[in-house]
Image (cartoon, rainbow, N blue to C red):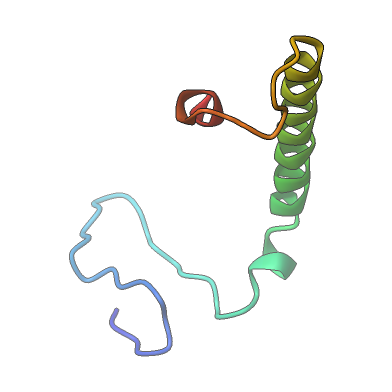
Amino acid sequence: MSNPNLSHTFEHLDPPLLEVCPLPPNTTSNLQPLDSGIISSFKRHYRRRQMQHAIDAMELGKNSYKVDQLTAMR
């Protein structure tokens, strides 16, 4: 299943009860519309947490732009 136009190769896979069918190039947004909903939901959640962190930091008199690595990962 090696095709130079595909970004992923599946030569090493041999699933017994599964057929791997890669999507054609540049069609993900058309064939997987739920991705946009999931991504926008994630962005809303992330921005809400980011804004809450900034508000909490300002209330404590801290720099709202300074975020330590652990907080960023959470």
